[in-house]
Picture 1 (cartoon, rainbow, N blue to C red):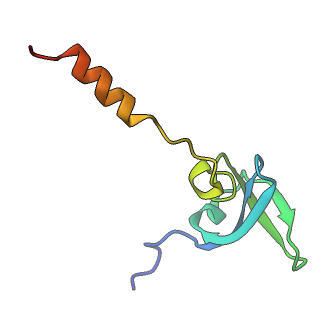
Picture 2 (cartoon, one colour):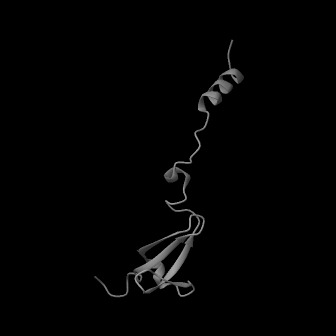
Amino acid sequence: MRPDTHPAYGDVVFRDRSAGTAFLMRSTLVARTDLPTVEWTDGATYPVFDVDVSAASHPFWTGTARVLDTEGRVEKFRRRYARG
């Protein structure tokens, strides 16, 4: 590979504040210098990036997703545009 063509890639902690969970993953965000740091369970210090939604708080993955009443919508459409 050519040198200096790829961004820095390393360990970053992603923290979901709404669920209170954190994940240690690899990312190119490690190159950002404005991120705060946090001490992880292994004793090392990593940059931390706060996310709004993760698998721990997304309604689809937590089982709290709403099911829409599609049958009512279809009936409303048919009543509105009925030919007869």
